[in-house]
Each structure stands twice: as C-alpha cells, then as structure tokens.
Image 1 (cartoon, rainbow, N blue to C red):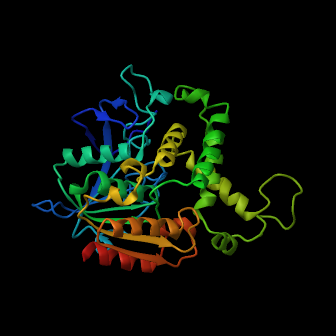
Image 2 (cartoon, rainbow, N blue to C red):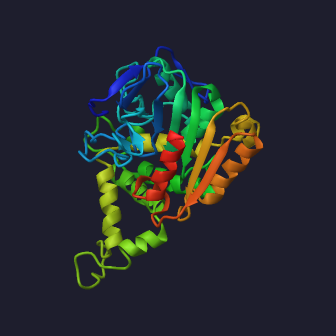
Image 3 (cartoon, rainbow, N blue to C red):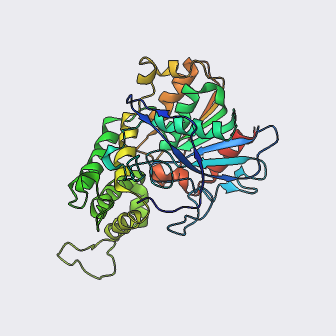
Length: 366
C-alpha cells in the first residue's frame, strides 16, 4: 500500500485524459510548498522532480528522514529563495509518494497494480496543470526541472505555453535515446523477473519484489555517475578486507556502494511505479508530439529559456541540450545555454556545483 504521508494533496476536479486514450478518475496530486504566494500570484515557481525523487524538495523525507533532495538550493536566502518565491513541488502521477499511481486504490477498493494505465510525461504535466488550476495559479514565474523534471518543464512550455514565463531545463533531453531505453528495459526486466512481483499484484503479499527493484536501481545509478567520479571515489579499492575473497561477496567498494543504493531504494519506492515512470520517460519524444519537428513544439511559447548541461553527463550529454537550444533558436524563443564542468556525471544537478547555483540564480532573478 502507498505510505501514509503528511503532504498537502489536491483532488483534481475533473477526470484526467491520458495520451493512451484512457481516463483516470479521482486523481490525487500530493505536493509541498515553501514560501509565501504573492497577492498577485506572480512569484510561483514549480519544481519538477526526477524519476526517483518526490515532492520533498526542501523538507525532510517522511520515510528516510533525510533532507530534501534539493535542500541545498531551495530555502530562505538560497539559490531558489523562498523569501522571494512561492515554490511548489508535486509528486507526479504514477509515482508512490501520495499522488495517484499503481499502489493507489482503484474504484473497487483494491490497488491498481498493473491495471493502472500507461502514462506519458505529458500526462504527468496534465496532472501538474490540474494542480495549478486547483491552486488558482494561472501563470508561473519559472518552471524548473533536472533530468525527467527537465522533460516535464519542456513539455509544460510546449503544450501549455501560456502558463509559464521562464523555463529552466537542466541535464535533460527532448527525447529518450535507444541507449536510455535499453538501460530502463534492463531495470524493468529485473523487477518483472523477481518471483515476488506476482504480475504486479504484490501489495497484499508478504513480500515485495525488492530484489528486482534493487537491481534496477543499481543499474540506473551507474548511469547517473561518471567514470571519473567513480574512479576518484572508489577506484579498485577493496571493501573492509585486505585481499580478494575469490567469491561473489562485495569485494570492491563500488560493489558495496551499489548494493547499499539498491537496498535503500526499496524502502522508499514502489516497484510498479518504477515500471510506469521509466516507460513514460522512454515514450518521451517532444518532436514526435508536434509533427516531427522539435522547433514546432515551441512555436507558441513566449517564455525565456535557460538550458544547462554537464560535460561529464553521458546519460543526457551536452549534444542533447544543444539539440533543444537549436530548436528554440529556430522557433525564435529567447534562450541561454551553458555547459558546466563537473566530475559527478548526470547527478551533477543534485550536487555541489557553485557554477550551477550562479547560473540558476541569475536566470530566476533576472
């Protein structure tokens, strides 16, 4: 079952139509807010989260107790200054931290499981727009997102251009590549091969497909890092031993680290949600949604854009960001672009990169 959470929640006033042609009824969107909303509602910033993140962008996670995933950037006097801005971060549909997803109860009182309809990034954004409508916020000062969050930010700008003034897209892409899809498929197959998956109907079982989900997380986590970062942090150093065991225990520090990441992840995430969200990311192709030409996706936008990439990110490399920038140029949209140097790989947008802070603050406040 989905965990009991203390987040705010809005029940959408209308059914949510999906790209698949199906409709979700009674959709709940769980969200957190930080900072006061101005009387004219002109200072609202929407932060869109990545695949395994949630609405707890700047507050302690209710399950792990850890600080929010972007707590170093969001708060009073910080890069995204909650003394100036009203920050909203919502859990996407399909996830497992309070918004409607596979673990939620369907109309028959049982968890959806695999009866939950397949969703897209645009469907996630439909849910976010429904949340904004429920909060009576017609136009955002800025929408911000890294990775899958960046996909949502671009989708909002393309499909609801009147709803946002500034778009900050970090370490993201306008479509998933064959390599991206391949890595996700490995993770999905690991989950579905777990004997505790029970074809997705495991919520009333004693055990969940934690082993499969942990392997999926391990495989994905490798893509978030850089070879330089892994080598610097772990190299070939052994874990708590002086010699190789000549067995299949975690001899190397990097093995132990990945196992830790995998096991910890199962405590806060739902396996079916992982299937649905990775599939949504794989389906993402903003050009395809707009007749095959990416520039056409932004033809109606009047927003300012800032696109940021990292030189060590091989999951969504700088070439993907340049592709977005070229399309924005072709559409006549004002856009700034920067490739930042950082050794952390794709996860650089979540870590301490002072240059990122400077670029973000300049764009948001400018």
